[in-house]
Every structure is written in C-alpha cells, then in structure tokens.
Image (cartoon, rainbow, N blue to C red; front, top):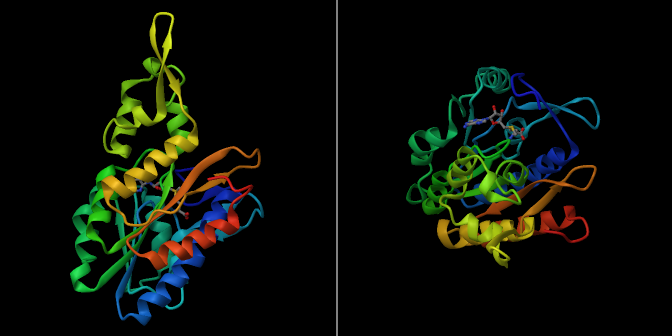
Length: 276
Ligand SMILES: C[S@@+](CC[C@H](N)C(=O)[O-])C[C@H]1O[C@@H](n2cnc3c(N)ncnc32)[C@H](O)[C@@H]1O
C-alpha cells in the first residue's frame, strides 16, 4: 500500500471484497427502495475511491466509486478518510453531487458525532456501512453503537494480520503495551486474552499457549452477537493472498435475516475449501 498517494495498489483479495460489496449493496438498495426506506451508504475508511489493481495493472473502482454506481442509488453517501489526498480524489469522483458528503478526519469520532445521528431507525433511515481499515485503527465504540442503532449493517475488515504481527505473539509478555492497547481499543476490552491464549501447566508454572486464527475470529463473532448485540453474524470470509495466507477476515453483521441470507450466499461462492 502507498498510503500517502491518492490511489493504493490492491491485491486480488481486495478485488474480491469489492465484488462482494457491489453484489450486496445492489441487492440491499433494491430492497430498501421497495420498502420506501431512506437508505444511506457509509464508507468510514474510504480511501481515494479508486485503486491500481496489482492483477491487471489498471485503475479499478474502490468502494466509494462502486457505491456511487449502485442502481438504484442510495439516498445519501458519507465518505470519511484521514488523508487530504484521498478526500481530494473523492471530491473529483463525486463531482459536486448533492447526495455525497465528504469528511476528512478520524472516523472513530466523525461517525459517532456527525453520521450515526442521521441514520435513526425511528425516522425510517437505514444504513450500510463499510469499515475497512488497514489494521487496528477502529474503536469498538463504533461497532457497539452501530449495533445499538438497529438501523445499520456493517461489513468489517477484521485485521488479523496486524493482530498477529504486533500483539498475538507466542510469548505475550514481550509485546509492547502500546500494541496491546491498540487491540484493546478494537476489541473493546481485554477479553481477547482468554480467546487468543490458553493456559497450559509448565515446569515453572502456567504457560500461555496461542490459539488458532479461527478461534480468535470465532471469539470476535460471538462478541458481535452477544456484546455488540447484532442479531445475525454469518461466518466471516477469510481473504487469502497468493500464498494462501490469511490477510484479513471479512465480517458482515446485521439485524436483518434477509441481509444475512444474501451475504452468507455470496460468501459461500468465494470460500476456498470451506474454510472460515
Ligand atoms: C484499506 S484503505 C480503504 C479502501 C477502501 N475501503 C476500498 O476498498 O476502496 C483504508 C483507508 O483508511 C484511511 N484511514 C486510516 N485511519 C483512518 C481513520 N482513523 N479514520 C478515517 N480514515 C482512516 C486510510 O487513509 C486509507 O485510505
């Protein structure tokens, strides 16, 4: 990735994510329109709106541009990014459309203060939100509040590679406390310790043993259901690189059973060897 440029270079796993978003957003928008609901698209880590594909070498639409092309259109679009270059690029793509709102800054505060209040369930508003950080840059409050609103469903990039690289080490005692804090902020508390490690008796007392990615991911799925309070969270999709290593897991969480069914069906088509 080249975060300081307007466009990132993306691997095919990102293109799969974008295909999934296109398919679901299109179905979602049709259903919302049919039910006369005011539906809103939110891209919290929006990027520049376009990317260079590492597969084709060409400029391909990113999530904001895909969302803008959905037919029937959403009633509002909200794109947030930290970087000025990305916002500038988004401004060019949006071309003064009155239904597009751009925000430069930290989505963790912008969502809570400026966007969620516009998506109230009792005002017949509904939202589809993509939370797609590079790593552990999202705060649990965003997830918990979006679940509590009942009006919002999310796609969430669960950044397992950042977790494993910086926090979930074989020897947890050697981890930098600042890295642990990043995971606490994402997970919402320290309960990830009980999910990511088991205690085994050793010669000199208890030894922490690392569990698998699947166990960590399932622990987080249970949090989305039981702590955040989403009603439906299908098994997430493992996004794999060319060496078959997991780059991240793509979660979907919703209060809507139809949404879950559609996404579970889409995920099924992209699963390799049935892995989570
Ligand atoms: C993985 S890219 C997004 C890609 C985009 N969703 C797509 O698929 O086309 C992540 C983006 O999040 C932005 N970002 C990082 N931290 C952020 C934060 N706290 N708030 C808002 N944007 C942030 C980065 O500048 C970067 O453009």
